[in-house]
Image (cartoon, rainbow, N blue to C red; front, side):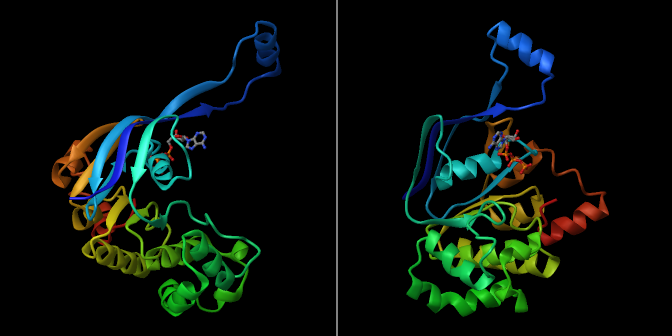
Length: 258
Ligand SMILES: Nc1ncnc2c1ncn2[C@@H]1O[C@H](COP(=O)(O)OP(=O)(O)OP(=O)(O)O)[C@@H](O)[C@H]1O
């Protein structure tokens, strides 16, 4: 087996900023007190993912999932520990990331693909497929600064999924897309999984994680609370008690990020 992602005692610290009165600031300055609080968004997290594994990254809002993906992707550096990855990484982490607002969708496909490591010729060869998948019609030639968040996600996901990567990171992909697009994304991610690429998929939806993943990591206040099989992970999160709630169930069937 080949290791694909290794995190060893990874931590990331952020500064908590909140409003202070002028009086509080003046007093702190006189007393030479430091008014900034820091906290660990990712706290001493360790795990190993083998090439071809499909992992659901779950946890409540603010538990550190997106931060962990950014550390794996290399957008951020850890303050402690180390992150090792093997091969090319693609994915959709933050909607609109890697897009230039004043350029058209068409130009942004080339820009985004270049950022992900594709040559111009490679992008040209995949261009029609990418545009077909995004299905944003005549908006392809409008500046992306005027796009809705759903259109951003469509184009970003379309580019990322068509890059031949070894690791695919998916965060919030399904949160803003409409239902037909969500179905399309799920099908495409299943293809990614079946092709032996490593899939790390952030989701709040037990249904889509059951469908897509063979292992679950659960973050709790930045710490890795659970790492193991999917059904137990969903039970650990207490996400398995929605049986009576028709609205949640309907969303879940589609694999929506609720
Ligand atoms: N750049 C930053 N500076 C300061 N704090 C940050 C920054 N990015 C994230 N945080 C904080 O770190 C914590 C973890 O955020 P993160 O986005 O990783 O959570 P998440 O699990 O992805 O949440 P959600 O499910 O809501 O998307 C939150 O408290 C968030 O406010």
